[in-house]
Amino acid sequence: MNDSPQAEFRKPLFWILAGVIVSVLAIVLAVYPWPAPEVDVTYGTMGWLGRKSINGTWVLAEMVRRSGHSVSRSTHLSPMLKEQADCLIWFAADPNVPHESVVTWLEDWLKAKPGRTLIYVGRHFEATSLYWKKLLERFPDQYDPVRQKEIARRQALEEQFLQLISNVEGQCAWFSFKPLPDVVRPKSLEMHPQWRVPVNPQDLEIELRSQMIPAQDAEVLIRSEKHVLVARLPRGSSQILLVNNGSFLLNMMLVNREHRKLARRLVQAIDESGTSGPKRVCFLELRPGYQVVTGPTEEPSPYRFLTVYPLNVIVLHLFLLAVLFALARFPRLGPGYEPDLVLRTSFDAHLAAMARWLRRTRDYQFVQEVISQWERISAPRGQGGRGLRERPHKSRLLRY
Image (cartoon, rainbow, N blue to C red):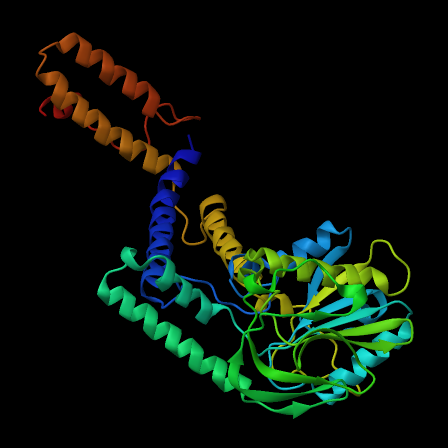
């Protein structure tokens, strides 16, 4: 019976704290402007976000996985990646050419082991503008004029963004970029004999907004007139595959059957460098302006996982649940109390209430039996026999 008062004392505190935390979370979820667009447009990622994004690479990663290769992702160039990866697929997040330190690191990686492949995909394309355009063309009757105007506005904003990133010029050891005055939509393809696939050019939806000019030792694999789509740079038994942009490799663009044929041919090229068989393929997701840090570096903090989403949110929720569990499970700290006194006081109040109720029955004998039973229960134990504190008299209780 001594546990009952503690539970009674803990319950209100537990439910009050739980209610406060739930209320705060509900307010945060309702007020905070969460980035929840109707269409996920996250670019160049193959993770959880890449699976839902029209600009993700999850579909291409699945094609690589179904070819028998293992697939992973990395957000930085690490010694472990340099040692273990057999193929790197890099969808550049920066419209500028790669930094010199990144080019040097990747060249060293290609030389470290034979039979490696680097696939570089330029940034000068996004599927978002094309998505809004198709939405208006294919479903014009499903949206009211206000909604159509909003979709047209979003399409115009995406077009401006594409024009902005496509006007960037640059040159590195592998290639150079020059902006095109108009968008080029190839309707005919010239392929290297080893890269020929049965493609219907009229069904292609490839868009070129900049001209990729590979290095002199490059071998053009797919072109449209004077515009290069895919080129190859040999590096001994390794290779670099340069792709103008992701207009036939991103998630939404791979809905097109002809694009899947070209993407499948690109995946097959992974086995054409070195020995065939399962390889470890890693998708690089480097931030814009990424540079390789040279010289001594600081040891990574063991708490760096607290800055990684969504792991940091999960850890925060687990911490709050642990606090609630501790408050509900472990004893309260503070001034003590006499459990026996609480029990007797509570029983006295209960007995008085029962006396008031039993008085209505006018069953005096039954009331006397209840009072006698209470006297036996409430009598203090030990030597001394009778009570150590004053008890209510029978007649006092019966007056209720």
